[in-house]
Length: 341
Image 1 (cartoon, rainbow, N blue to C red):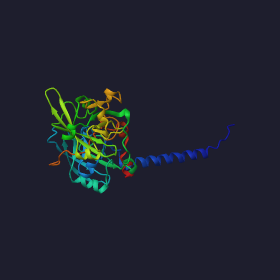
Image 2: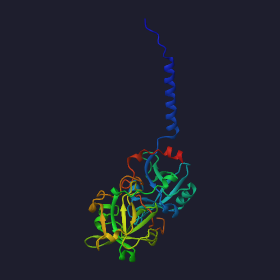
Image 3: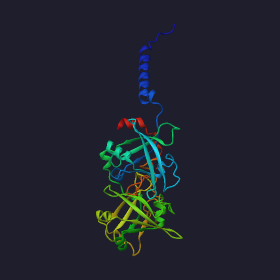
Image 4: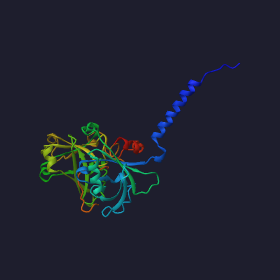
């Protein structure tokens, strides 16, 4: 005769557990909200994005998502942006060749920054509604950086050293430092050799005190090569107490904001130890780090004109796939992000 077994209690517990899982799943993906939006890329804000009322989006982040870039000098397109509150805006997008970046500089961006109290290093995220949605329609949200994150001091690690330049009498007089083509080729590939930019390109550096230093590179092509001259602002020279005989050192960030983002610091008096006429030294030559420190992997801006706009300091994300955060970001949930803001 079969033994009677009381399974009522266990079955009840199992039923409760299943109900709880179903409720949690429904809260995660409510039936009336439809499919989860598709994450495209994110851009970390810099000081200029907030203060200059202009959002720069590195070309490599957005080129696969924005309307095609057929002409870098006359590009002007419109996209639609939807915010979590349901606000829909028609936004003009231009392109700045010197920054190699798409630019949003209309009233929408200024109002968006002010309304949300955005600060440098906050992240702007672009989503597609659903796969196959119109190419010019995006969902946009943001994620705030905590005060502690904003206070993080950049790490100048020996293994991430790229190269150094000597601050000479000539450099002090003209506020220009010549960067050997070899160093540009190895460490600043976003500029390109030969460069697509005509006359100028932009790099962005973070200093030892976590301050930003946008730097213009002057490109002087010759029949055989392209000379690269880095401009140094009076403010950079003064605030870093830069003197003849010092070394300007360049490092790869642990988490670059974009493919044109690097670290910079001054080594006081170190240049006096160099032989006369020796302007630079690199990780490749000195055995002080990896040879391909291009700063394009890992970190920050991830992978997506207003009349009279000119190139200015800041980015640039990169920036993205080169300069972008990779696969992990594809899993960003717009619902979770919006819920956290």
